[in-house]
Length: 114
Image 1 (cartoon, rainbow, N blue to C red):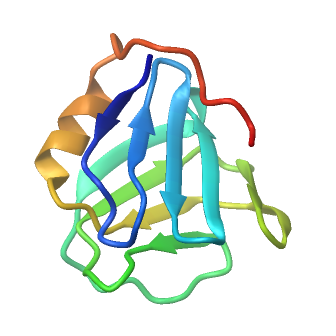
Image 2: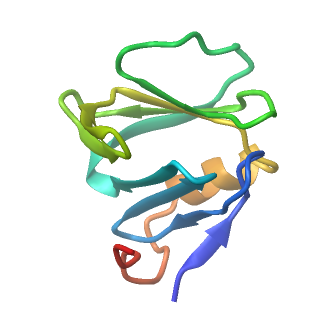
């Protein structure tokens, strides 16, 4: 069983488990981020610029959550694996997502690859 937490502004929910964060955003956005790769998460109001190691999943909304990853973290994308140091999200309930990321008791196994 997975706990679904605030949706991205773009179509698709965020699923958080003890093992990691599953981000789905439209047809091309399906990312698995291990919990061990997450260094910090914080609220943000800064409009994110494109960056070589930045993954932006804000949809048509604006950025309100910034997740910093451990150096060298590699995430799969539809265009191949790449190093990502930050993930910028636009979610409906940023405070709820940030609180869930701080907890370590989120039940459930990681999602199965589709």
